[in-house]
Amino acid sequence: MAKQSRKIIRNIHHDDPETESKNRKKPGRDILLLVVIAFTFGVLFFGWASFNIYYRAMYSLLVVSLSLTYMHRHGSFKESINKWFDRISLVSIAAAVAIFCGIVVMNFWG
Image 1 (tube, rainbow, N blue to C red):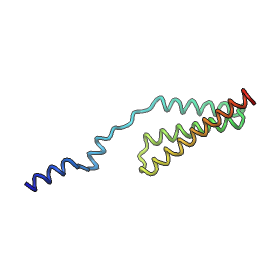
Image 2: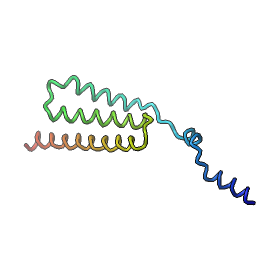
Image 3: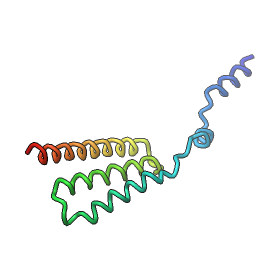
Image 4: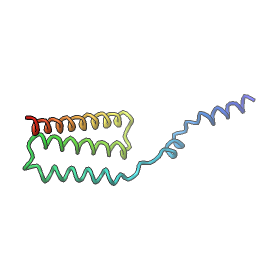
């Protein structure tokens, strides 16, 4: 009886890393994310001479945020590194949105 209960407990609490990695859903290819990264980088590259410092900062932060998102989804990093990728990505996208709001305020009410 004890042997059967150990088997049942082992099957219920099966923490085999190989099985978890096999069951882990692999991310897609994220073609749309790559296209958006390339487009944003292209806008930044070709518009660099005509952009002021605010536009340069906004587009640079967008490229950083999107690149970190892609690295987080497709990289095989430690969990602690992935947390930092998430945090830096969120901070950079929030800063880009704040800069965008500042540009809108300066252009329409400034």
